[in-house]
Image (cartoon, rainbow, N blue to C red):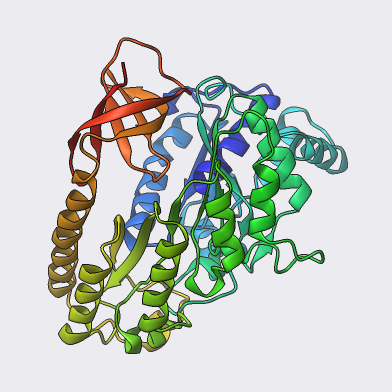
Amino acid sequence: MNVADSQRLASALEQLEYEPTRLPDNADVIVLNTCVVRQSAEDKAIGRLSSLKPLKERNPNLVINLMGCLIGVRGNQKILERFPWVDVVSPPSDPSPLLHYLIERTAKQTSQIAQAQVNAILDGDPILPRADQGKLISAFVPIVYGCSHACTYCIIPHKRGVERSRSYVEILREVNSLAQQGVKEVTLLGQIVDRYGLDLPERPTLAMLLHDLHKIEGLSRIRFLTSHPNWMTDELLDAVQELPKVCPHIEVPIQSGDDTILQAMRRGYSVAFYRDLIGKIRQRIPQVAIATDIIVGFPGETREQFTNTYNLLTGLRMDVAHLARYSPRTGTYSARLLADDVSETEKMRRFRALETLQEEIANEINTRLLGQTITVLFEAQKRGRWRGRTPTNKLVFVETSENLLGREEPVTIEWAGPWSLIGSLQA
């Protein structure tokens, strides 16, 4: 989501005739787009913000914009008091405060005229930043902002606000514009992406959106994340199976393999329900790759409850498991009312146990691909090798002198590891 927000802001700044620079010392404007979903991300943002103070002291005309979850939808007065060298603050997914500030400051326009210019920029067809034009093959497209589910550990509703679906027409227009600019793949984003449209008067569904996006010329692949088990409908699974452009790659978090912990997290489903859902997904979409999320060390999690999670992951054999150690976030229910009673040492032990298990599972799954020929969409060149992804989101590297950017090519897999594959172009 932050990548999409940053690209949108970069494009808007270019329309105000700003150009990107790699060196902060050369910048007239610096934007720090922040994430606070985990404590480590917040600490990193605070450290980076602190490092900008000397730049502001050397150049008082430098404009520093703090954006994203560190500000949140309600603002953050304490942050502003702590970092007075920040000139402008922007809530998540909202570039307008910085644009308004710059137009008023540099063009010396009245507030009303500045706002009209901001609206004109943001309401126009999406334009990729110049650095991405002709190079960006895969793009993120937010379709749901915020979240209203309020899992007890999650800061997102507090920082990004209530669930808000974007206009159906606006999404189609954006994806069509991206396709015309050379983007081959889009990933639709939402904290609970499969709840798309439930708050709109017309009640469109994610499945309906996939069907209409599938018709866009030039677009090759469509993905979506992250799904919630309770909202993954048969209609949505049918769309994934029926539409060739929709990748058979589903991210659906479990978070814990123990019912008591799931209740404490307010996830709204049981382990049995989740296990049945995975079975149904695999039955309807036999070629599917499934990713999950797991939090270890949630307040009150016993060793037995962790073992239940370990055993569930052992049995389900997921392609990917995104792992995290529980981190109390100020403003969440768990931080206010539940004791963070699992030691950091024990959290790390559990994390490493799942990490080792998932590495073995992923290696086993990927090894089955040896000798197979799979279509890969190539996104970029890295260290002399071309990098691309399969429809099931497997990372593939190929060495060749050919320019593969944006091409979909059949690749024969010659080496398989838990996190990536190596292959050669089919002769």
